[in-house]
Length: 116
Length: 117
Image (cartoon, rainbow over all chains, first blue to last red; front, side, top):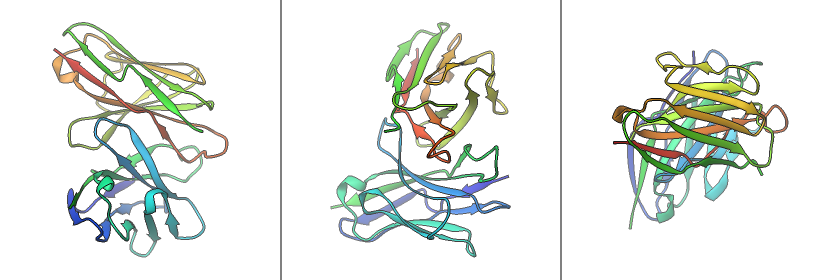
């Protein structure tokens, strides 16, 4: 069974500061990895994903994440926070094995607050 | 591309009534659709997975007779909350995936806020 742990349910940063949202996973086989953002009363928007290849993945809105197999981590970063980045962020994994690749397991979420 | 819509976006109903929520893939064929439930300040909980033309697979603890899911076509899945009660009030989100192209990705709808009085 897979699981996802997001460290820190709330993260506050100042505008212009580095954003770091942590995600660790547990899986017998390295999974597909995703970061989603959710604004209030909206669905989820994909920020980025890792499936194979380069372990540093660049996404939308200046976000990037690095897959580190040895650490079973997929932390999300952005060099400079913007007020519009304030939202809920979810890390998710899915099993890459054939037949079960699409079911997502979500972390508990991290609420990002950006302070002026 | 890969747009998923949900209707209605918000619904208020009386206790005991049934509510139907539609999930549509607008520009692709969704072989699999997922229904999630999200309580305030919490993560998404998978309720069920449905494949076109097949019965839905429900997660443990989800009452299939209460949450009826129909996936009659490759672009439409519906979730019907039967005999709704206040504890069913929640944010319901659907997602869709396809077997071609970005097969390892789910595309999410904007969600439906259900309030049962």
